[in-house]
Image (cartoon, rainbow over all chains, first blue to last red):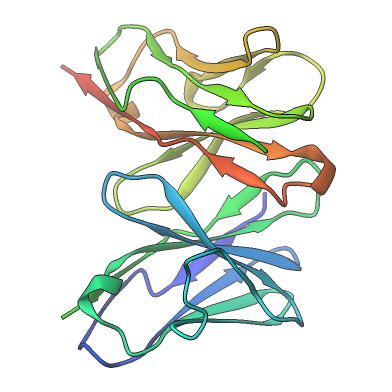
Length: 116
Length: 115
């Protein structure tokens, strides 16, 4: 099956620094990847759609200058949280569509960001 | 537009008892429907999916779900709960026309399994 891997799984950083999270499709090419944010005991909130070779599409209310998304290859998308603040602490999850047309999404393991 | 509701944010069952997690959807086009499970501090794992064909779908770990168009439901069941089933469960609906471009999650149901 399709495998999506995220790295790092946990990261702690100081306020004001930037953090990069990687999302890789290991055994398939993903022209589209999705980034979500999940608050404790809540559902996933779609942040943006990452398209290979073009600019990401951000959901309403998501700051594109705060959350930089780069999808430079068919197997890698990155989310950079710039000038992180404690309110950016959250669980971030990426997903990708497989090569089938059934609309199924494959998810990474998630990355827990803690900003001190 | 599509939407998903999950009745009951928290469901508790005894080990060995029937598990029933409810999901109702709204979709203007024939939907693709999914159930995902999330364990603490992990991503989502697909349990099962309905696209076309047989309306009773079997998934991993003994779970199954039935697509009922007339009731716009896709409830998840398991005959006998196991302690390892304790997790968060998300129902989701996808727009088949866009090959999953529009993927909407329900709010989730936390399943607790009591010994």
